[in-house]
Length: 85
Image (cartoon, one colour):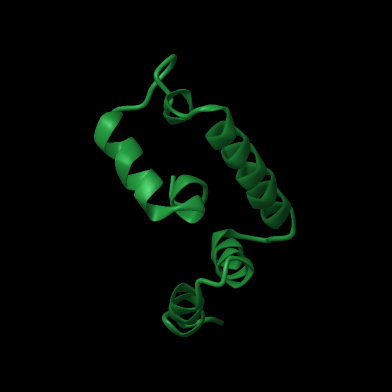
């Protein structure tokens, strides 16, 4: 949710959680969107998958995701918030 819907627009993520608090089979978040919204979600998922393919682990993914989507506070927190070997 955070890497797809919230990354597109935080209000979209919040509204989808409100109207569909328990997504499951045949009641997924994307089903509440119009065609334009579904295309935005599809495009975002493609971006996320591309970033995932470049990463070695979840920390690496979060750092690269934050960099690509200009989430500087998240990138700094992930970079400086953990002790690395």
